[in-house]
Image (cartoon, rainbow, N blue to C red; front, side):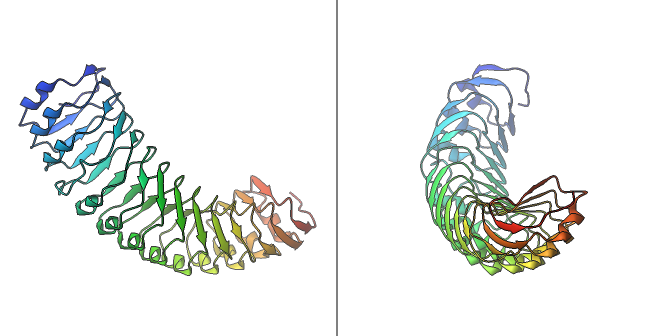
Length: 325
């Protein structure tokens, strides 16, 4: 079945009689009611996609019988309850999207048995508990999105085993503790967002090993210590470290990031002069260093940014001088 033809009403239980079905694709309709238990009979099913509907209730544990599933997409519905149906039986699953629902409970540790998984998105829900260390067994995973839940505890060191990761979204949860140094193993990671948590400690220098990293969001945490100078060896286009407890100077190596488009470290406790090397960041659009303890003269080299810079905020520091643009 493949349709988005304005279907309304519940999914009939008779669907369980279509035992040869391979694809069930009914996204962006007006389906209501709960998922019929009889779907468990569709053991040949490879694609189950019903995003953007109004399905309610929980996902039956019996769905674990769908061992041939490759894609399972129930995003943007009204589903709730635990994720207990996620057992080790999904040995072929590559794409699991369940975002924008109201799932509760923990992420099952059995999820680590889904060795073929490439995308895991359960963001904007009500999940709680800690991240299972078994996530580290998902070596083929490229996208992990768990933002805007109620997850807590520390980020397990096993995250460094997820060597296929390209995008990691953990923002708006209640994680605490440090970012494990093993994150430096993620050589393919391009996007890292751990903002709006309660993470502490310093940023490990192992971040310099993340050679593909483009954007990093550390804002609204409790990070301390200096920004490591090794970030100057990366090819970043964005750094957000606002609303933390960072101290020390802005490393002059930041000026090596000539592709950087935004650099935000406002509302911290950073000191020292603004490095003149920041004037070499020819792609910079946004520079916000306000509400810190920077001192000295605003470097005239920042005038070179006049053709690209759209937002500049240096207020609430102890700076002198002016710029000509």
